Image (cartoon, rainbow, N blue to C red; front, side, top):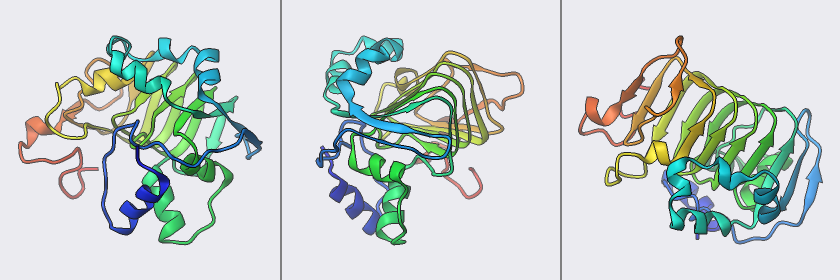
Length: 240
């Protein structure tokens, strides 16, 4: 498991690490707490309680539910951040961005950013989520029991569930950790019960063809087919 100190070290080294959700687990325990933010009160709760209350296992993708290893790792998460009601966040939900903000920029973090760095990175929103940027990299999982409307959405090797519709106002990205997977990483990690819409959709070994794209959405670009030398969904300048 990777601790907060390892994350900060990667930021200082300028390394854009791509870690599995379970590797991104913090070692420092976080007490149960409740902090009110504008439009976004949240609590840090025992994960087992949260998983049971919201039936999160049933919300995993069908492929994930068939994997014993996935279920075992999911059950090891200790803490979860829970938002009750609709959420509007000014902060980016991005672990490396927050770590860089704290370590390099020396900026004061919001209570949510502090909690996201210090606790296990499992987020449940019991309502709609509106944010600037959502990046599930280095997360255990993000479960939204409503709609998602964010400027940018970047999906990685973490469980991601949306009960309603998913809208990425600028772009939607999906990326595996490497090019040695089975080619169904997107289908294994991502489940959206509603429609998906974005003006730009780019994936790298992380196909999202199983999702229902709205008529006004751009079509998915499978970057590994477009450029065999690519190393991610944004391989060239102005790709994203």
